Amino acid sequence: MNGWEIIASFVFGLLVNEMTDVSPWAARKLVRWAAYRWTIDPDIAAGYAEEWTAIIDERPGKLLKLMTALRFSTGAAGRALPRVFVSVRHATTQWLARHTTVPEKVWNEALPFFVAAIVSTFGFGYASGSVHGRASAILVVIALVVQIGLAILIVRPAFRYRRENRGLFRR
Image (cartoon, rainbow, N blue to C red; front, side):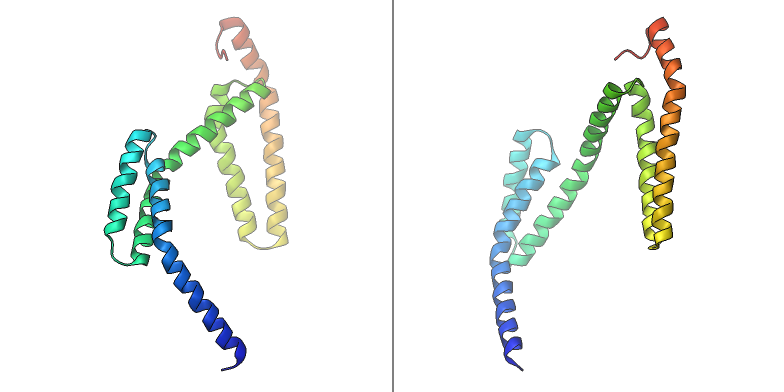
């Protein structure tokens, strides 16, 4: 065993010791974060935080506390994710409706398809790992943007006509 191995084992031993000492504190912070992501109501979230902190404090060992808190936070993130998607989608459709002549209702229906097409295009292009895959993915995205632009230009007069003559699609 040379000098570097002795120093590395000493440093890693200190790091593991410190991490296990920090685990209960991190577990309490994670449980509090998870409780406020679990529900929208702050009073109910405070109740969950107290109950879950009591559960964490009852667990034996330091790493088991952290693992239990990670499970709570995983469940809370899963429950909060749909709310995040809905709010991002709503903000995006409002922005697109304000900055284009296409009504918000159309953007609200079409946006998931556009996002899925772009994500799948980049996913398949980069998954191949080749320059050709990346270049084709970029070309497909450019073609998709051009296609969306053409569709907006074609559909715009129809929506303008409906909005002006029948009062539909009011913003």
